[in-house]
Amino acid sequence: MPVLTPIPRLRYARRGANPTLEMVEYVRAALVAAAEPVSRNGLLRVLAEWRHATTRRSLNAVLGFFIAHGLVEEGPRGVLWLPTTTPAVLQAFRAGRRL
Image (tube, rainbow, N blue to C red; front, side, top):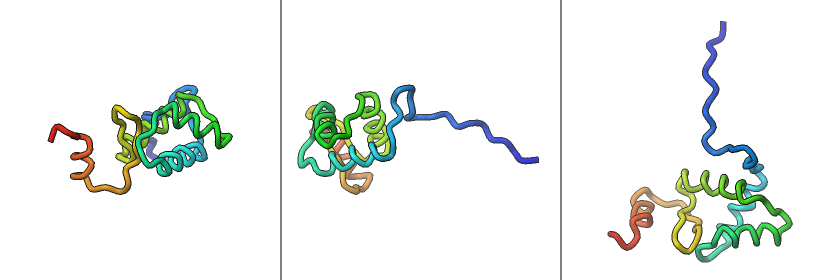
């Protein structure tokens, strides 16, 4: 008889906020293309220009996933894509001027 494992608890999927893989790729492309931090409203504008508008909930779900995995960092001026970094560089970025 197979061993049944419990159903995993979802960390990022929320009712009304389940972006597709396509949307994740568009958000990633918009962040990579931006040379400076971009606001959430700016991301929504870019996605609408690309004819791939989304809801704020879905955008927040994508950004939450990216932040949790260290791919982006959110600051006072918006969201910034972080190229592949070491944990030390990521810690320094998060500490900012408090170093």
